[in-house]
Length: 506
Image 1: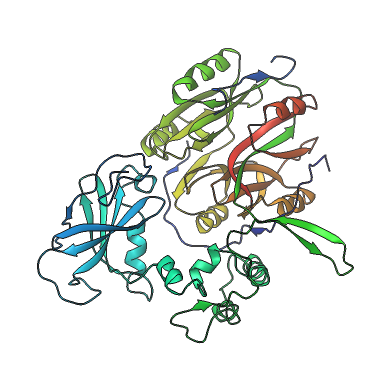
Image 2: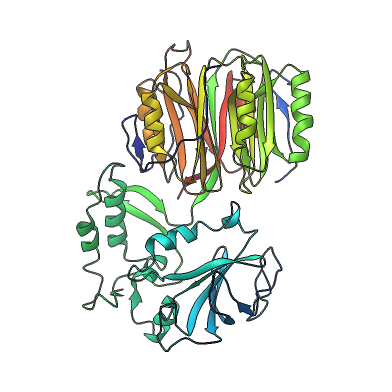
Protein backbone atom coordinates (compact mmCIF):
# COMPACT_ATOMS: atom_id res chain seq x y z
CA UNK A 1 0.00 0.00 0.00
CA UNK A 2 1.11 3.59 -0.53
CA UNK A 3 1.87 6.20 2.03
CA UNK A 4 -0.93 7.11 4.40
CA UNK A 5 -1.09 9.83 6.98
CA UNK A 6 -1.99 8.34 10.36
CA UNK A 7 -4.34 10.54 12.37
CA UNK A 8 -5.65 10.40 15.91
CA UNK A 9 -8.38 7.81 16.07
CA UNK A 10 -11.90 8.81 17.02
CA UNK A 11 -15.12 6.95 17.88
CA UNK A 12 -16.61 5.78 14.58
CA UNK A 13 -19.99 4.92 13.22
CA UNK A 14 -19.95 3.50 9.69
CA UNK A 15 -22.40 2.09 7.21
CA UNK A 16 -21.87 -0.09 4.15
CA UNK A 17 -24.10 -0.79 1.19
CA UNK A 18 -26.33 -2.87 3.46
CA UNK A 19 -27.02 0.07 5.81
CA UNK A 20 -30.60 0.89 6.66
CA UNK A 21 -31.96 4.28 7.77
CA UNK A 22 -34.92 6.62 7.63
CA UNK A 23 -36.83 6.64 4.31
CA UNK A 24 -36.66 9.78 2.24
CA UNK A 25 -38.21 10.73 -1.09
CA UNK A 26 -36.04 10.69 -4.22
CA UNK A 27 -34.97 13.78 -6.11
CA UNK A 28 -34.58 14.16 -9.90
CA UNK A 29 -32.61 11.70 -12.01
CA UNK A 30 -30.94 12.19 -15.39
CA UNK A 31 -31.95 9.34 -17.64
CA UNK A 32 -29.41 8.04 -20.17
CA UNK A 33 -28.11 10.67 -22.29
CA UNK A 34 -11.79 35.39 5.63
CA UNK A 35 -8.19 36.32 6.36
CA UNK A 36 -7.58 37.56 2.90
CA UNK A 37 -9.89 37.67 -0.03
CA UNK A 38 -8.23 34.85 -2.02
CA UNK A 39 -4.94 33.19 -2.75
CA UNK A 40 -3.74 31.48 -5.92
CA UNK A 41 -0.84 29.13 -6.48
CA UNK A 42 0.28 26.66 -9.14
CA UNK A 43 2.28 23.48 -8.98
CA UNK A 44 5.41 22.91 -10.96
CA UNK A 45 7.12 26.04 -9.67
CA UNK A 46 4.41 28.47 -10.66
CA UNK A 47 2.20 27.44 -11.24
CA UNK A 48 -33.35 41.52 16.55
CA UNK A 49 -34.62 43.20 17.26
CA UNK A 50 -36.35 45.76 19.37
CA UNK A 51 -37.86 43.53 22.02
CA UNK A 52 -41.18 44.29 23.64
CA UNK A 53 -39.37 43.99 26.94
CA UNK A 54 -36.27 45.95 25.94
CA UNK A 55 -33.86 46.35 23.06
CA UNK A 56 -30.93 44.37 24.43
CA UNK A 57 -30.49 41.77 21.69
CA UNK A 58 -27.66 41.71 19.21
CA UNK A 59 -29.59 40.31 16.25
CA UNK A 60 -29.23 40.93 12.53
CA UNK A 61 -32.77 42.22 11.98
CA UNK A 62 -34.29 45.31 13.53
CA UNK A 63 -38.02 44.64 13.06
CA UNK A 64 -39.79 45.35 16.37
CA UNK A 65 -41.95 42.69 17.95
CA UNK A 66 -45.69 43.46 17.69
CA UNK A 67 -47.62 44.62 20.73
CA UNK A 68 -50.46 42.20 19.98
CA UNK A 69 -50.70 38.94 18.06
CA UNK A 70 -53.58 37.32 16.20
CA UNK A 71 -52.83 34.50 13.73
CA UNK A 72 -54.55 31.50 12.17
CA UNK A 73 -57.97 32.12 13.70
CA UNK A 74 -56.57 32.67 17.18
CA UNK A 75 -57.94 35.16 19.70
CA UNK A 76 -55.96 38.36 20.17
CA UNK A 77 -53.08 38.24 22.64
CA UNK A 78 -51.08 41.04 24.22
CA UNK A 79 -47.31 40.47 24.11
CA UNK A 80 -45.86 40.93 27.58
CA UNK A 81 -42.53 40.08 29.24
CA UNK A 82 -39.83 38.06 27.53
CA UNK A 83 -39.30 34.51 28.78
CA UNK A 84 -36.06 33.90 26.90
CA UNK A 85 -34.42 33.48 23.53
CA UNK A 86 -32.51 30.84 21.61
CA UNK A 87 -30.40 30.58 18.50
CA UNK A 88 -33.16 31.78 16.18
CA UNK A 89 -36.21 32.87 18.15
CA UNK A 90 -37.56 34.83 21.10
CA UNK A 91 -40.32 33.70 23.47
CA UNK A 92 -42.71 36.03 25.31
CA UNK A 93 -45.65 35.68 27.66
CA UNK A 94 -48.91 36.34 25.83
CA UNK A 95 -52.10 37.38 27.67
CA UNK A 96 -55.48 36.83 26.07
CA UNK A 97 -57.37 40.10 25.66
CA UNK A 98 -60.89 38.65 25.46
CA UNK A 99 -62.54 35.47 26.74
CA UNK A 100 -60.58 32.52 28.00
CA UNK A 101 -60.67 30.71 31.30
CA UNK A 102 -58.50 30.18 34.30
CA UNK A 103 -56.85 27.01 33.01
CA UNK A 104 -53.05 27.10 32.79
CA UNK A 105 -52.88 25.18 29.50
CA UNK A 106 -55.02 24.64 26.43
CA UNK A 107 -56.34 26.83 23.64
CA UNK A 108 -58.55 28.76 26.08
CA UNK A 109 -55.81 29.55 28.60
CA UNK A 110 -55.45 33.22 29.49
CA UNK A 111 -51.64 33.06 29.54
CA UNK A 112 -49.67 31.41 26.75
CA UNK A 113 -46.14 31.39 25.41
CA UNK A 114 -45.59 33.16 22.07
CA UNK A 115 -42.48 32.41 20.03
CA UNK A 116 -41.28 34.81 17.31
CA UNK A 117 -38.78 33.83 14.61
CA UNK A 118 -37.77 36.43 12.02
CA UNK A 119 -38.32 35.38 8.42
CA UNK A 120 -34.67 36.08 7.56
CA UNK A 121 -33.23 33.82 10.25
CA UNK A 122 -31.30 30.71 9.21
CA UNK A 123 -34.14 28.51 10.41
CA UNK A 124 -36.50 30.12 7.87
CA UNK A 125 -34.41 29.90 4.71
CA UNK A 126 -37.00 27.67 3.09
CA UNK A 127 -40.22 29.04 4.58
CA UNK A 128 -41.77 28.32 7.99
CA UNK A 129 -39.35 26.90 10.58
CA UNK A 130 -38.91 23.13 10.55
CA UNK A 131 -39.62 23.38 14.27
CA UNK A 132 -43.30 23.64 13.37
CA UNK A 133 -43.27 20.06 12.07
CA UNK A 134 -41.43 18.86 15.16
CA UNK A 135 -44.02 20.37 17.49
CA UNK A 136 -46.84 18.90 15.38
CA UNK A 137 -45.30 15.46 15.87
CA UNK A 138 -44.42 15.83 19.56
CA UNK A 139 -47.07 18.26 20.80
CA UNK A 140 -48.98 16.91 23.78
CA UNK A 141 -46.16 14.60 24.84
CA UNK A 142 -45.33 14.96 28.55
CA UNK A 143 -42.95 17.88 28.94
CA UNK A 144 -43.49 19.22 25.39
CA UNK A 145 -45.76 22.27 24.95
CA UNK A 146 -48.73 21.90 22.62
CA UNK A 147 -48.92 24.47 19.82
CA UNK A 148 -52.45 25.82 19.37
CA UNK A 149 -51.93 28.39 16.63
CA UNK A 150 -49.15 29.17 14.18
CA UNK A 151 -48.77 31.55 11.28
CA UNK A 152 -47.01 34.65 10.06
CA UNK A 153 -47.53 38.21 11.25
CA UNK A 154 -45.46 40.96 9.69
CA UNK A 155 -41.80 39.91 9.51
CA UNK A 156 -42.19 37.06 11.99
CA UNK A 157 -43.27 33.44 12.02
CA UNK A 158 -45.30 33.03 15.22
CA UNK A 159 -46.27 30.05 17.38
CA UNK A 160 -48.78 30.29 20.23
CA UNK A 161 -48.32 27.41 22.66
CA UNK A 162 -48.87 26.23 26.20
CA UNK A 163 -46.75 27.77 28.91
CA UNK A 164 -45.77 24.78 31.02
CA UNK A 165 -44.38 26.50 34.09
CA UNK A 166 -41.06 27.74 35.46
CA UNK A 167 -37.97 27.39 33.32
CA UNK A 168 -35.07 25.16 34.30
CA UNK A 169 -33.17 28.20 35.49
CA UNK A 170 -36.12 29.34 37.66
CA UNK A 171 -36.40 25.84 39.11
CA UNK A 172 -32.67 25.78 39.79
CA UNK A 173 -32.85 29.08 41.65
CA UNK A 174 -36.02 28.17 43.56
CA UNK A 175 -34.29 25.04 44.85
CA UNK A 176 -31.48 27.18 46.23
CA UNK A 177 -29.13 25.49 43.74
CA UNK A 178 -29.07 22.44 45.99
CA UNK A 179 -30.51 20.17 43.32
CA UNK A 180 -29.90 20.02 39.64
CA UNK A 181 -32.59 19.08 37.16
CA UNK A 182 -32.05 16.51 34.45
CA UNK A 183 -31.70 18.66 31.33
CA UNK A 184 -29.69 21.31 33.18
CA UNK A 185 -27.25 18.71 34.48
CA UNK A 186 -26.07 17.89 30.98
CA UNK A 187 -25.09 21.50 30.37
CA UNK A 188 -23.31 21.75 33.71
CA UNK A 189 -21.16 18.60 33.38
CA UNK A 190 -22.58 15.53 35.15
CA UNK A 191 -20.30 13.12 36.97
CA UNK A 192 -17.58 11.85 34.66
CA UNK A 193 -18.32 8.18 35.39
CA UNK A 194 -21.91 8.60 34.21
CA UNK A 195 -20.87 10.61 31.13
CA UNK A 196 -18.30 7.99 30.09
CA UNK A 197 -20.80 5.14 30.51
CA UNK A 198 -23.49 6.88 28.47
CA UNK A 199 -21.08 7.88 25.71
CA UNK A 200 -19.74 4.35 25.39
CA UNK A 201 -23.25 2.91 25.18
CA UNK A 202 -24.36 5.30 22.42
CA UNK A 203 -21.18 5.18 20.37
CA UNK A 204 -21.27 1.38 20.25
CA UNK A 205 -24.75 1.30 18.71
CA UNK A 206 -25.17 0.39 15.05
CA UNK A 207 -27.30 2.40 12.65
CA UNK A 208 -29.85 -0.38 12.24
CA UNK A 209 -29.91 -1.27 15.95
CA UNK A 210 -33.06 -0.58 17.96
CA UNK A 211 -32.07 1.32 21.13
CA UNK A 212 -32.58 -0.50 24.43
CA UNK A 213 -34.52 2.30 26.06
CA UNK A 214 -34.90 0.52 29.40
CA UNK A 215 -31.15 0.13 29.64
CA UNK A 216 -30.53 3.75 28.70
CA UNK A 217 -33.07 5.00 31.25
CA UNK A 218 -31.49 2.81 33.92
CA UNK A 219 -28.23 4.74 33.51
CA UNK A 220 -29.93 7.59 35.36
CA UNK A 221 -31.03 5.50 38.35
CA UNK A 222 -28.08 6.44 40.54
CA UNK A 223 -28.48 10.12 39.75
CA UNK A 224 -32.18 10.86 40.10
CA UNK A 225 -34.14 11.28 43.30
CA UNK A 226 -37.16 9.28 44.48
CA UNK A 227 -39.76 11.48 42.74
CA UNK A 228 -39.53 10.77 38.99
CA UNK A 229 -41.99 13.52 38.09
CA UNK A 230 -39.61 16.18 39.40
CA UNK A 231 -36.36 14.42 38.40
CA UNK A 232 -33.87 16.27 40.61
CA UNK A 233 -30.30 15.22 39.96
CA UNK A 234 -27.93 13.97 42.62
CA UNK A 235 -24.81 16.03 42.03
CA UNK A 236 -22.56 14.37 44.59
CA UNK A 237 -19.16 14.05 42.99
CA UNK A 238 -19.99 16.26 40.03
CA UNK A 239 -17.56 18.97 38.98
CA UNK A 240 -18.46 22.43 40.20
CA UNK A 241 -20.16 24.76 37.79
CA UNK A 242 -17.70 27.34 36.49
CA UNK A 243 -14.65 25.28 37.38
CA UNK A 244 -11.96 25.45 34.71
CA UNK A 245 -12.13 22.42 32.44
CA UNK A 246 -8.91 20.45 32.40
CA UNK A 247 -7.46 17.61 30.38
CA UNK A 248 -8.66 14.30 31.74
CA UNK A 249 -6.13 11.49 31.74
CA UNK A 250 -7.23 7.87 31.39
CA UNK A 251 -4.72 5.59 33.08
CA UNK A 252 -4.06 1.96 32.22
CA UNK A 253 -4.12 -0.64 34.96
CA UNK A 254 -0.39 -0.20 35.48
CA UNK A 255 -0.90 3.49 36.21
CA UNK A 256 0.73 4.81 33.03
CA UNK A 257 -1.00 7.64 31.21
CA UNK A 258 -2.71 6.35 28.09
CA UNK A 259 -4.59 9.18 26.36
CA UNK A 260 -5.53 12.77 27.12
CA UNK A 261 -9.08 13.86 26.37
CA UNK A 262 -9.94 17.52 25.96
CA UNK A 263 -13.35 18.56 27.24
CA UNK A 264 -14.42 21.59 25.23
CA UNK A 265 -16.55 22.90 22.40
CA UNK A 266 -16.68 21.17 19.00
CA UNK A 267 -14.17 22.39 16.43
CA UNK A 268 -14.47 22.78 12.68
CA UNK A 269 -11.57 22.35 10.28
CA UNK A 270 -10.65 21.98 6.65
CA UNK A 271 -10.36 18.36 5.53
CA UNK A 272 -8.22 17.93 2.43
CA UNK A 273 -7.45 14.74 0.49
CA UNK A 274 -4.41 14.23 -1.73
CA UNK A 275 -3.87 11.56 -4.41
CA UNK A 276 -0.64 10.57 -6.08
CA UNK A 277 -0.67 11.78 -9.72
CA UNK A 278 1.77 12.29 -12.55
CA UNK A 279 3.12 15.87 -12.54
CA UNK A 280 0.42 18.30 -13.66
CA UNK A 281 -0.65 21.89 -13.24
CA UNK A 282 -3.02 22.58 -10.35
CA UNK A 283 -4.30 25.84 -8.94
CA UNK A 284 -6.40 26.75 -5.92
CA UNK A 285 -8.39 29.77 -4.81
CA UNK A 286 -10.04 30.25 -1.42
CA UNK A 287 -12.04 32.89 0.46
CA UNK A 288 -13.56 33.78 -2.91
CA UNK A 289 -16.68 35.95 -2.88
CA UNK A 290 -19.48 35.37 -5.40
CA UNK A 291 -18.46 38.43 -7.40
CA UNK A 292 -14.86 37.21 -7.85
CA UNK A 293 -15.58 33.62 -8.81
CA UNK A 294 -16.12 34.18 -12.53
CA UNK A 295 -12.79 35.91 -13.13
CA UNK A 296 -10.86 33.11 -11.41
CA UNK A 297 -12.63 30.40 -13.40
CA UNK A 298 -12.17 32.27 -16.69
CA UNK A 299 -8.46 32.77 -16.03
CA UNK A 300 -8.09 29.07 -15.24
CA UNK A 301 -9.93 28.09 -18.41
CA UNK A 302 -7.60 30.29 -20.46
CA UNK A 303 -4.67 28.37 -18.92
CA UNK A 304 -6.20 24.99 -19.79
CA UNK A 305 -7.56 24.26 -16.29
CA UNK A 306 -11.03 23.01 -15.29
CA UNK A 307 -12.69 22.78 -11.88
CA UNK A 308 -11.99 19.49 -10.09
CA UNK A 309 -13.31 20.27 -6.59
CA UNK A 310 -15.22 23.02 -4.78
CA UNK A 311 -16.17 23.76 -1.18
CA UNK A 312 -17.49 26.57 1.01
CA UNK A 313 -16.49 28.14 4.33
CA UNK A 314 -18.33 31.05 5.97
CA UNK A 315 -20.25 31.68 2.72
CA UNK A 316 -17.01 32.05 0.72
CA UNK A 317 -15.90 29.57 -1.94
CA UNK A 318 -12.81 27.42 -2.31
CA UNK A 319 -12.09 26.25 -5.87
CA UNK A 320 -9.54 23.68 -7.07
CA UNK A 321 -8.66 23.71 -10.79
CA UNK A 322 -6.25 21.42 -12.62
CA UNK A 323 -5.25 20.04 -16.00
CA UNK A 324 -5.89 16.41 -15.13
CA UNK A 325 -9.69 16.24 -14.91
CA UNK A 326 -10.19 14.55 -18.29
CA UNK A 327 -13.26 16.75 -18.91
CA UNK A 328 -13.88 18.17 -22.37
CA UNK A 329 -16.28 20.98 -21.43
CA UNK A 330 -17.66 22.50 -18.27
CA UNK A 331 -20.42 24.82 -17.03
CA UNK A 332 -21.26 26.03 -13.53
CA UNK A 333 -23.98 27.98 -11.75
CA UNK A 334 -24.27 29.83 -8.47
CA UNK A 335 -27.83 29.70 -7.21
CA UNK A 336 -29.68 30.91 -4.10
CA UNK A 337 -31.26 27.43 -4.03
CA UNK A 338 -29.71 24.20 -2.79
CA UNK A 339 -29.76 22.82 -5.58
CA UNK A 340 -31.34 24.50 -8.64
CA UNK A 341 -33.35 21.58 -10.05
CA UNK A 342 -34.42 23.18 -13.35
CA UNK A 343 -30.88 24.21 -14.31
CA UNK A 344 -29.45 20.79 -13.44
CA UNK A 345 -32.06 19.01 -15.56
CA UNK A 346 -31.47 21.39 -18.44
CA UNK A 347 -27.74 20.56 -18.42
CA UNK A 348 -28.48 16.82 -18.19
CA UNK A 349 -30.34 17.20 -21.48
CA UNK A 350 -27.11 18.58 -22.98
CA UNK A 351 -25.10 15.55 -21.70
CA UNK A 352 -23.41 17.47 -18.88
CA UNK A 353 -23.14 15.63 -15.53
CA UNK A 354 -22.56 17.00 -12.02
CA UNK A 355 -18.85 16.71 -11.26
CA UNK A 356 -18.62 18.97 -8.19
CA UNK A 357 -21.09 20.61 -5.85
CA UNK A 358 -20.86 22.86 -2.78
CA UNK A 359 -23.32 24.65 -0.53
CA UNK A 360 -22.95 27.64 1.78
CA UNK A 361 -24.49 28.34 5.16
CA UNK A 362 -26.82 30.96 3.67
CA UNK A 363 -28.58 28.30 1.57
CA UNK A 364 -26.97 29.02 -1.79
CA UNK A 365 -25.09 26.48 -3.90
CA UNK A 366 -22.39 26.20 -6.54
CA UNK A 367 -22.88 23.34 -9.01
CA UNK A 368 -20.27 22.35 -11.60
CA UNK A 369 -21.32 20.10 -14.51
CA UNK A 370 -18.92 18.61 -17.03
CA UNK A 371 -18.71 16.68 -20.29
CA UNK A 372 -16.17 13.90 -20.66
CA UNK A 373 -17.14 12.07 -17.46
CA UNK A 374 -17.66 8.30 -17.64
CA UNK A 375 -21.18 8.64 -16.20
CA UNK A 376 -24.20 7.36 -18.13
CA UNK A 377 -26.97 8.29 -15.69
CA UNK A 378 -27.20 10.49 -12.61
CA UNK A 379 -29.54 11.17 -9.70
CA UNK A 380 -29.34 13.48 -6.72
CA UNK A 381 -31.12 14.03 -3.42
CA UNK A 382 -31.39 16.98 -1.03
CA UNK A 383 -32.24 15.96 2.51
CA UNK A 384 -32.45 17.43 6.02
CA UNK A 385 -30.45 14.45 7.31
CA UNK A 386 -27.94 12.08 5.76
CA UNK A 387 -30.08 9.87 3.43
CA UNK A 388 -28.77 6.37 4.21
CA UNK A 389 -31.79 4.50 2.91
CA UNK A 390 -31.86 6.37 -0.40
CA UNK A 391 -28.12 5.71 -0.91
CA UNK A 392 -28.63 2.03 -0.16
CA UNK A 393 -31.48 1.86 -2.66
CA UNK A 394 -29.41 3.51 -5.41
CA UNK A 395 -26.45 1.22 -4.68
CA UNK A 396 -28.71 -1.72 -5.50
CA UNK A 397 -29.60 -0.02 -8.80
CA UNK A 398 -25.94 0.32 -9.81
CA UNK A 399 -25.39 3.94 -8.77
CA UNK A 400 -22.45 5.17 -6.67
CA UNK A 401 -21.95 8.41 -4.75
CA UNK A 402 -19.79 10.75 -6.86
CA UNK A 403 -20.33 14.15 -5.18
CA UNK A 404 -21.60 15.49 -1.85
CA UNK A 405 -22.22 18.89 -0.30
CA UNK A 406 -23.88 20.49 2.70
CA UNK A 407 -25.71 23.74 3.32
CA UNK A 408 -26.20 24.42 6.99
CA UNK A 409 -27.50 21.07 8.26
CA UNK A 410 -28.85 19.93 4.86
CA UNK A 411 -27.17 17.33 2.65
CA UNK A 412 -26.99 17.01 -1.13
CA UNK A 413 -25.88 13.62 -2.45
CA UNK A 414 -25.15 12.98 -6.16
CA UNK A 415 -25.03 9.38 -7.40
CA UNK A 416 -23.99 8.19 -10.86
CA UNK A 417 -23.99 5.04 -12.95
CA UNK A 418 -20.75 3.85 -14.57
CA UNK A 419 -18.68 5.65 -11.92
CA UNK A 420 -15.79 3.17 -12.17
CA UNK A 421 -16.26 1.62 -8.71
CA UNK A 422 -16.89 -1.98 -7.71
CA UNK A 423 -17.91 -1.26 -4.11
CA UNK A 424 -18.51 1.70 -1.83
CA UNK A 425 -18.91 2.44 1.89
CA UNK A 426 -19.81 5.47 4.00
CA UNK A 427 -17.99 6.65 7.10
CA UNK A 428 -20.18 9.10 9.04
CA UNK A 429 -19.36 10.37 12.52
CA UNK A 430 -19.60 13.34 14.84
CA UNK A 431 -15.79 13.30 14.75
CA UNK A 432 -13.43 12.76 11.83
CA UNK A 433 -13.64 8.93 11.32
CA UNK A 434 -9.90 8.32 11.34
CA UNK A 435 -10.09 4.71 12.52
CA UNK A 436 -12.60 3.77 9.83
CA UNK A 437 -10.65 5.54 7.09
CA UNK A 438 -7.43 3.68 7.88
CA UNK A 439 -9.21 0.36 8.10
CA UNK A 440 -10.80 0.97 4.66
CA UNK A 441 -7.46 2.07 3.21
CA UNK A 442 -5.95 -1.23 4.33
CA UNK A 443 -8.68 -3.03 2.37
CA UNK A 444 -8.05 -1.12 -0.86
CA UNK A 445 -10.67 1.64 -0.61
CA UNK A 446 -9.93 5.28 -1.43
CA UNK A 447 -11.74 8.48 -0.39
CA UNK A 448 -13.74 9.66 -3.42
CA UNK A 449 -16.19 12.19 -1.91
CA UNK A 450 -16.67 14.02 1.36
CA UNK A 451 -18.74 16.71 3.02
CA UNK A 452 -19.33 18.00 6.53
CA UNK A 453 -21.80 20.03 8.56
CA UNK A 454 -21.16 21.73 11.88
CA UNK A 455 -22.23 18.45 13.53
CA UNK A 456 -21.04 15.59 11.32
CA UNK A 457 -18.42 14.55 8.79
CA UNK A 458 -19.17 12.06 6.02
CA UNK A 459 -16.56 10.38 3.82
CA UNK A 460 -17.33 8.12 0.86
CA UNK A 461 -14.70 5.44 0.28
CA UNK A 462 -14.80 3.47 -2.97
CA UNK A 463 -13.11 0.41 -4.41
CA UNK A 464 -11.90 1.37 -7.92
CA UNK A 465 -12.46 -1.17 -10.70
CA UNK A 466 -9.01 -0.31 -12.01
CA UNK A 467 -6.45 -0.02 -9.27
CA UNK A 468 -4.08 2.93 -9.79
CA UNK A 469 -0.37 2.30 -10.19
CA UNK A 470 0.35 4.38 -7.10
CA UNK A 471 -2.34 4.02 -4.45
CA UNK A 472 -0.93 6.69 -2.17
CA UNK A 473 -3.64 8.81 -0.58
CA UNK A 474 -3.15 11.23 2.30
CA UNK A 475 -5.52 13.37 4.34
CA UNK A 476 -4.91 16.55 6.29
CA UNK A 477 -6.97 18.53 8.79
CA UNK A 478 -6.18 22.20 9.33
CA UNK A 479 -7.89 25.15 11.00
CA UNK A 480 -6.99 27.40 8.04
CA UNK A 481 -7.07 26.62 4.34
CA UNK A 482 -3.99 24.38 3.81
CA UNK A 483 -2.22 26.62 1.26
CA UNK A 484 1.31 26.00 2.59
CA UNK A 485 0.68 22.27 2.94
CA UNK A 486 -0.64 22.00 -0.63
CA UNK A 487 2.67 23.26 -2.01
CA UNK A 488 4.59 20.71 0.07
CA UNK A 489 2.35 17.96 -1.31
CA UNK A 490 2.90 19.13 -4.88
CA UNK A 491 6.64 18.64 -4.40
CA UNK A 492 5.84 14.94 -3.73
CA UNK A 493 3.46 14.67 -6.72
CA UNK A 494 0.46 14.58 -4.38
CA UNK A 495 -2.43 16.70 -5.67
CA UNK A 496 -5.66 17.92 -4.10
CA UNK A 497 -8.45 15.46 -4.89
CA UNK A 498 -11.11 16.94 -2.60
CA UNK A 499 -11.69 19.44 0.17
CA UNK A 500 -14.48 20.32 2.59
CA UNK A 501 -15.02 22.32 5.79
CA UNK A 502 -16.95 21.23 8.88
CA UNK A 503 -17.00 19.30 12.16
CA UNK A 504 -13.90 17.15 12.78
CA UNK A 505 -13.05 17.16 16.50
CA UNK A 506 -14.77 17.44 19.86
